[in-house]
Picture 1 (tube, one colour):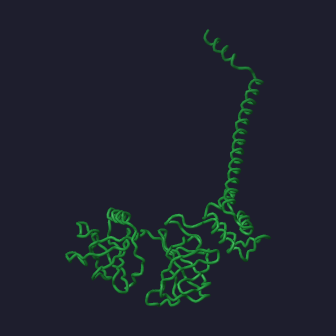
Picture 2 (cartoon, one colour; picture 1 turned 90 degrees about the horizontal axis):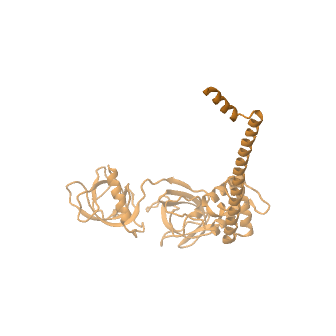
Picture 3 (cartoon, helix red, strand yellow; picture 1 turned 180 degrees about the vertical axis):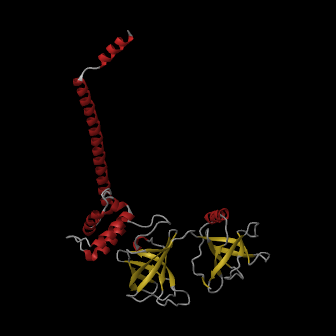
Amino acid sequence: MTAPILEAIARGFHHGPAYDQRFVEIVLALAFVAAAAVVIGRLVARRRSEAAARRIHERRLAEVGPSARELAALGVLARFLRPWEPPYLLLASRHVFDRCAREMLRAGAPDADFAVTDAELTLNSLRLRIGFHLATADDTPDSSLDLPVGSTILVSRENAEHPDGPFVQGKIAAQGPRAMTISLPTGSRPPPEGSVLMLQFRNQAGVFSFSGTVLYAGETAVQVSQSSTIARRQRRRYYRRRVRLSVSVRAAPGAAWQPALLLDLGGGGGSIQRAGSLSPQPEPFEISFSVPPGDRPVAARVVRVSRNGNVASFEFVSLSEAQRDRIIRIAARQPAGEHDGSERPRSA
């Protein structure tokens, strides 16, 4: 008797082929509506995003106030944006701007309102107007215009065999579309106009070099052409911080401790003033970060000294990671030193 009852219940849930077809049609319709809602939602979100990007772009344009030539340059640069990049990034991201500028200069990109012959000068003017520069001490420059005013820069000497070394230390006094102005130390011989110089800039990201032509040479300053080709020559693993820290040093274990002054310090080494008898040699010396010396000295090796022997540059020997971390913390706690680099260590 149970079987007929179950069969009757099963027949009650079965309504035939027409019902099955309508059920499938309803499911497909609901799926279509759901998919359409997703597509429409994405289109609405995209349009809102594009509208927001246009408002940001228009606001940045109003803030920057580019000239007609600079506005034409922006139009050409926009051709080199990635498909997903909104135009306002040209006014907000230094790296996007510089990437598009490099691609544009390589391609030539002729335009009726934008002559390629003065393209780089116009781009430099636009960079300055937007206000692009290195945002942090470990940022990588893409152009000489990225270097902040007041930064130290090394300028190659006309005589590479000069007794004080192949470079003279200057400071960036001003940035312009065509040239940067570099102030030189009193008494240094300015390079002749038309000469090509090698320049070096250093920050936490590494050592960068580029070349520039001397457009004007005065007694205490030169104007050097801007460069959009800047190369990293060295990546610093351990950045050195300028400090003025009294320490104790001794030439060998068991020798007498001598007071000295640290001028810069990092996880890989540093520079030390009033180092007494220290000189480049295979045997390491010991340094204690206190006066009088503490009970945890570390070993270091002198790698070069200044011409008058007053400043020694050293590297640490066989540091444990715990010791290196401690040294980095010591450097970070110190106020920035005021050593101007006039005593540059040289190779022995």
